[in-house]
Image 1 (spheres, chains in turn orange, cyan, red, blue):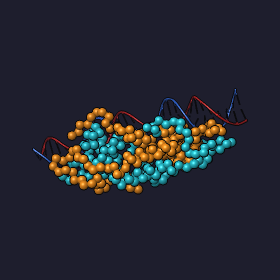
Image 2 (cartoon, each protein chain N blue to C red):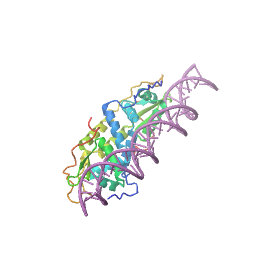
Image 3 (cartoon, helix red, strand yellow):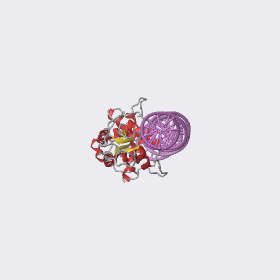
Image 4 (tube, chains in turn blue, purple, cyan, yellow):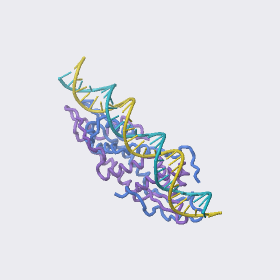
Length: 141
Length: 141
DNA sequence: CGAATAGTTCAACATGAATTGAAGTATATT
DNA sequence: AATATACTTCAATTCATGTTGAACTATTCG
């Protein structure tokens, strides 16, 4: 029954899924999450972020670069002293991310089973999508 | 102005942020996203997932293990033939994830700047959190 | 009982990305 | 012009995790 092909069928194919996959990679770093949390609390410069998080300036720059490339963060230089660079969240990009995530992981989207393989005799004994919870360490906090 | 400490200040500290950091790591893999997408479309067994995604059984098992540990996926064996194992999304865990994500990345949470450092002369010229968008490759699709 | 099947686990290896340390760039001050 | 300041960029190193291939486990069938 295993006849997997050699093409890249495992890469998300819709534009939405590709967007989400890329964004999730950007978010799945504790330090970047911490930076984003601080920027949610207000516009900040590299040294403010570095002070608050105990990170060197170059590492802050690196992570901010990743966030900027992802479109989540924007930068502006101080008008009085251009050495100061301020970073802030791009509200629209954040809202769009929230929409996409909420849509992809919407529980209302869960469907019933459509069997494509299984035992020859009896159909799978599944009355509803939720099975009895047997494992999981993190879901419940 | 750089006086970062050596403690683990960069690790998200609240329980919510830690939960989110862990979950995002689980989600930030294209193959796991693809698996989740298929499970959203209905309960499936290893070989159905493997066929659809062109992945070997052991890799499917590995990723499903990660998803189960995260509490997002549950398993049940077929009652007629215990060799068949079905996987499905844990609806409640998914709903909780959606809530946490939506809350953390809620644009309404964005605050104004509270300066902790900057040029000595003029205060930062920031009237509102949104700055003019200057960069970003992915945010707009 | 042996063979087949569905899936799981293990460990080595590969890969991608974060971190580190140095160097570079631009701006401001003396 | 020299020095200080706030970052940014680069490249080597380190680290975390995905992938591969083999071995294992449990169940079913002839």
